[in-house]
Image 1 (cartoon, rainbow, N blue to C red):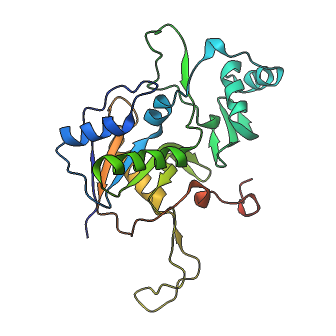
Image 2: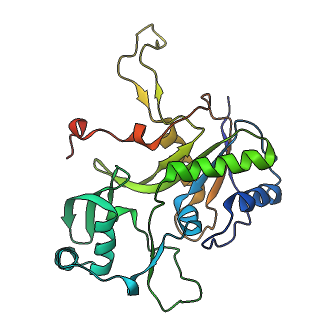
Image 3: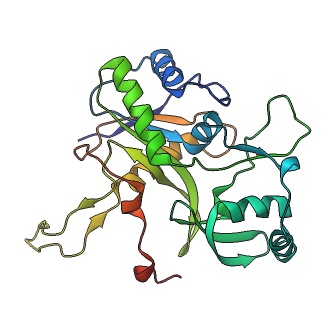
Length: 255
């Protein structure tokens, strides 16, 4: 068994309206990778968000009273806080420099997943831009997967990932925020271990495990490698959704 991951080269700076499928297919060719059935393409959310026009100029944001108050409490730009509120269902925790929310997509994250790194407007270097998460990452992954299949005839999986912190450990790690053609969870309850013990509670977040591996390859700074090609995923491909990875509130001991 082997799992092979490598970054694709020659991915340009993505702009609003760019066709990601065409860009990925050219990058695969440049990287001398011949796409096969059951391969997986893992994309950093930034390039998906940029192509979908999720970049916002803070100069165009008018903060509400609540955003101003939260900005003072957390020492954050109230315009940025306003965007966080608009992207969230609920504010859960605050401290200096951090606002933890339940995002509209359902998961808990810091600052509503809004990113400032590697973000620049089209020719407006003096303006202050930030990037929101895709509106529906599952839909984005599905559309990209279907377009690539139409153009190549290959059945593959597509994942969109982001870097998130965790309530019980330091540091960020790559997690899956959208997927198509890839299982989110593998239920191993009922399986037997080496000694015949029957597993009773083992649900493996295989999409998050792969997201972490791909994130390690992508890096976090100036690497310029936002897409990872994966071959040899050790489970059968199948349909998964982001919702499967989100723990229900009544089972969340950290709320």
